Amino acid sequence: MDYLKTVVPSQLIAERGANLVVINPGSANVRMGFASQDVPFNIPHCIAWQIPSANQASHPKMGRVDGLSSQQSKHDSKFTWTDVTDKSIKSSMSIERPVDKDADERTSPDVNDPNSEENNYKEMIFGDDALKIPPDESYCLSYPIRRGHFNISQDYSLHQVLEDLPHYLELDIDRKVAYRFKR
Image (cartoon, rainbow, N blue to C red; front, side, top):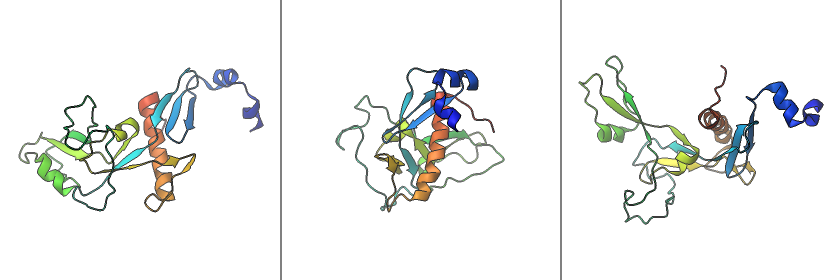
């Protein structure tokens, strides 16, 4: 343990290799990248979870990210919204039903076509993409860390925070830093 406190960064990179990933979890952004990089990636520290029912009235209301009034169309701006659906090809052997009852009505894939596309909503969305979810989609935005501490409240328990952080960090390391974990 004392060795890591006295080691010089260039010596550590020489010993451990260029695949050393540095993570600095700040309050608003997570900064991460390889130790050999000059500038790390800044990723917003937020997670959007899908709310199972689109017509559920108890989910918290969120303000618009782009600052547009509700009368303006989202197609009028140059702001790009996140696609919240996973399009997967439905095989003829498996018949899966979406979790959301309203998703059946919105997607309405042809059941008789064995290779029809099925739209499933992403369960969770991280970082930049979470901030760009359209306001008409049923997602709840959460910030696991606020002001340097775990963001624990009545609506966001310690258990949820501790479950969200590994998913968030693993996905962002995989997606942004392009480092694959050995399993």
